[in-house]
Image (cartoon, rainbow over all chains, first blue to last red; front, side, top):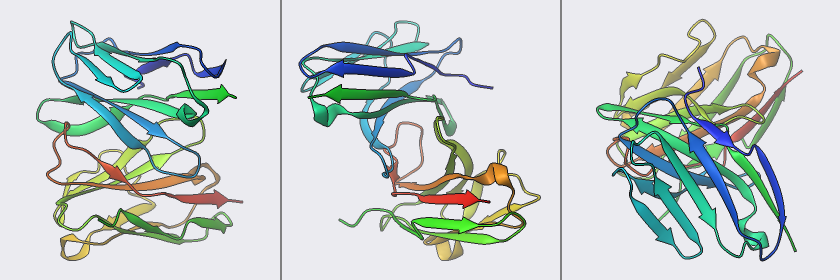
Length: 111
Length: 115
């Protein structure tokens, strides 16, 4: 059962454009993490959000956790070729330490 | 600080053969994870160790997959016998304490191709 739906599945944009990718679920998560994975490498953690409505900024990346803790978004301003990669969201629930990953959004930023 | 090490990086085998992967986590990390990532999908947890004990192996196909973490440090994942659908990248990760908000540090993965 796929509990986390990510959209879009693929996104190809030009350098300098803005974009938003989404992570949605019908279930409530106590925490949500975003990772970026480059080809041939393992995922690298970008951010962890734990409070409904929480917004975190990391340079040109803005992460938001939905008020009901069922969804999250990642907004990138002025995308650069270095932002290219697979963006994965992963949800955690309380004392269940297991993370559930979405399928990811594959982003390509063209120079 | 050294990251998570995995070997081999690539492996090609024929179906029904056996294969083993090795992982060395970050020093001092109590929790070790093995994930399977099929092309076009996110990582799926196969097994989670806390020190040398198993916390979760609910998605490990136990008829063919096995894993151990000797002395709570290194770990090996074995597939015997392999099937075509086992073709995937096998990722090892470690974290300090193992909560769902803990940072998981991933290795580069082992890409397995089963012919």
